[in-house]
Length: 350
Image (cartoon, helix red, strand yellow):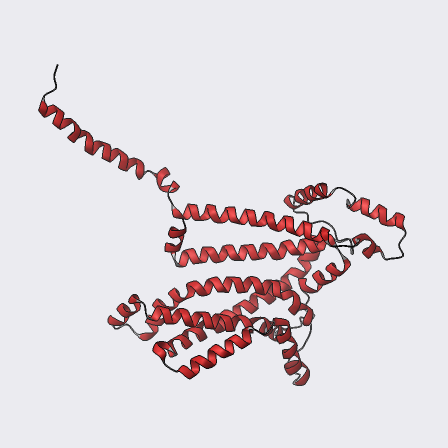
């Protein structure tokens, strides 16, 4: 039986919309939408990077400490300790086992939340870190908060004041000052602040954690350098944002100047600044070691230096893991904040 030309013509015409509808249904199904979500790909990629970085950190912290020459047990017990006592202590700590077995034991303890026991003091490493960590977090947190509170309005004001080539003298002065200040090491700045405000003027205490005034010099010594860097970066981003089309459109609508600067210029200028700020916060967390030793701050800095000198493997490993994990989490938070501020970057990366 032969199909009529009308039926043959109607068949494809009828099947075409049905097939297109079915394909559209499959493409817009929840499973396909989830699989194609850039946010899910972004989260999966960042999680994979975090896990790989954490594994590298754990392995490096284990190997670096064990490659340092010297006997930690002999350093802990003293040079005059009997060899039998040293051997017994090494066997008790498992230091005579092969390196791969020590590494496997180290990983197993990490998964159970055990960082080991200090060779020098005999205290759990988690207890030692728990006693010192809050002071370090306070110092790093207050320093970063002070740097942001000073640099954001200063960078915005400087960018607005020097737009379109205005106030060349102010621009040159600010740029030169920021470069010079950013080049000064934090511990050297800390010594200078101690000499001027502590020893000479006697305005603030120079050591310890004894009240509000004891925070001023440590926070200032850690925040001054980041302020110089952030002001310079934010000024450049503000100048670029002021030349953008959306700012011209906002001005064409006769919006008040403060709305243009705060609601249109500043959010777009903060994207690159936030990236640099995350790197600076990571550097500030690591830089607390030197500053804490200068100011005798009761944080992790003093303990980690004494542990390195005493070759206290478990304590040093615990501190390295804490610092490294903190830096990884800071980078992850910065990535998430950047994705929220500029979702287009997340889509492009995905």
